[in-house]
Amino acid sequence: MAVDGVGTLQPVVLRAINEVTGRHYRRIESFNDHPDTDHVQVVEVLARARDDLVAGRLMALRSQPAASQASLGARLAGWLNRFYG
Image (cartoon, rainbow, N blue to C red; front, top):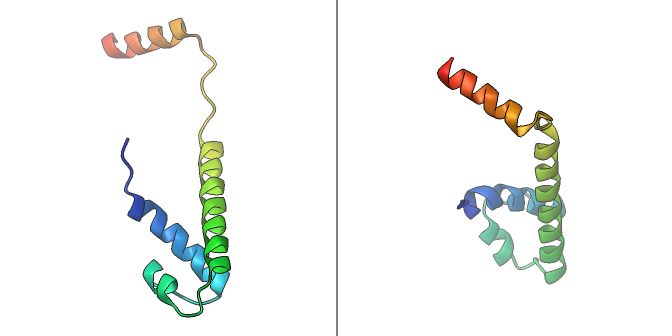
């Protein structure tokens, strides 16, 4: 499964940049090229973005309904009933 990295990561990284620096950047490159940007800030931004991604994925998993406890046979019978029914 391919994922668009720019579409997925850019908003998360920009939000982390804005939170860490307290400034509003519209592009990651602007943050990277800014003369006041140092290694410590970059590492902090990447750590914040990673934490946000992990938290977002965990929240998405928690919001999904629990898997059905029905047996394979019961699920297959239900599917066949819907298909032929």
